Length: 83
Image 1: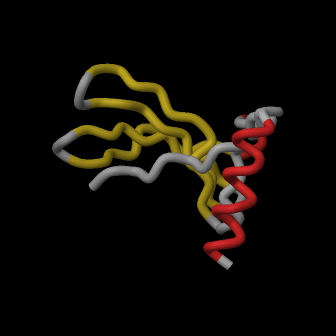
Image 2: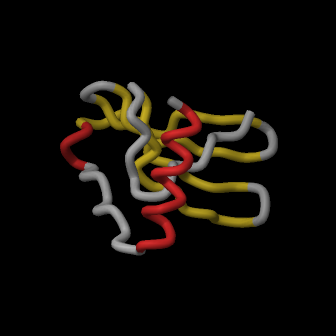
Image 3: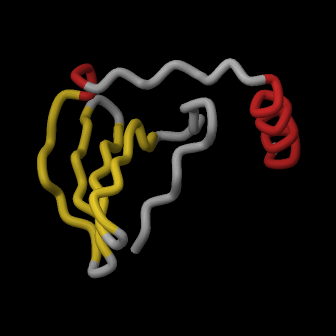
């Protein structure tokens, strides 16, 4: 199982948000996923997903959106098509 990448701009609009993801090697990464008021730190590999830690979501602020007109236009088109 693979985690979906967080949409550009940092907002998913859903109950689950991937706040950060760091690649550790070709087949392994660590991801911070917000679910309600909890932040789950997950180990992600080709073999599966493991819960590494459970923390208060306030400890992991969401990144600020990228101010890039091309990305902004692409996100508007994506949201328009998804809605």
